Image 1: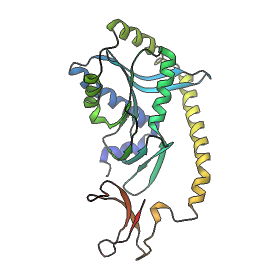
Image 2: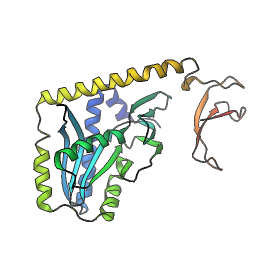
Image 3: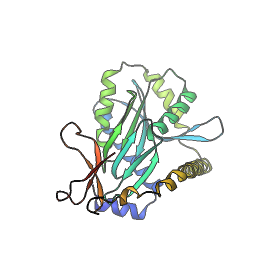
Image 4: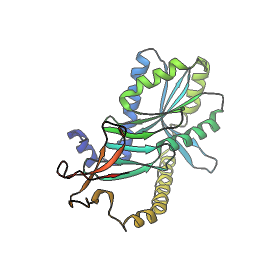
Length: 267
């Protein structure tokens, strides 16, 4: 899956923070479509919730409605996305086979929801939705819970509609306005708070990479995934997905020399 011309320009000019903000803005735009079709609510972006240790937890997008609050974690990645609900890290693989790991967004949003509940109480229903860019492909996402959705951005309306139709009204118009005013105050934080939040995120990211480093060094004893060589013909193995049969949907490594070489390596 390649990037279009605009995406290539954006990736080369702007940093990850800017691209993340762009993704949040696009998610907010999708929610305007939701409201246009009768599912009204209040939208907030970049809500900095206080934590008990003095730090903040930033929610990308909130949609406050009569059904409850939809909590969106926005990811503006390209490529193939692989992830498991219980794994600490997920993977984004680009067309050139380059792989980038990132923190499990389901776990990330559960942390946001924890601090949101701490701030507003437990009586308001909360719905967790992880939104990826339309530029990516959700190749293999494994979920065990019913209280979270992982979608591409163009499925925002359908996903909110599904929650809306399955849940009774739980929040009055007066309570919606009260919640909006209370949470809106957490969007107007000064630059010092924003900078401290970014520094804390970067610190945790570096700590995470430091923990992962021994695993990566151990992998170097064997060929890396992007350089796995076919033992039969010497060509590179590539990641593929079975399209039919009893293994349909499962991933494996197949020889790039197919059909002359039919060697496969199961995951």
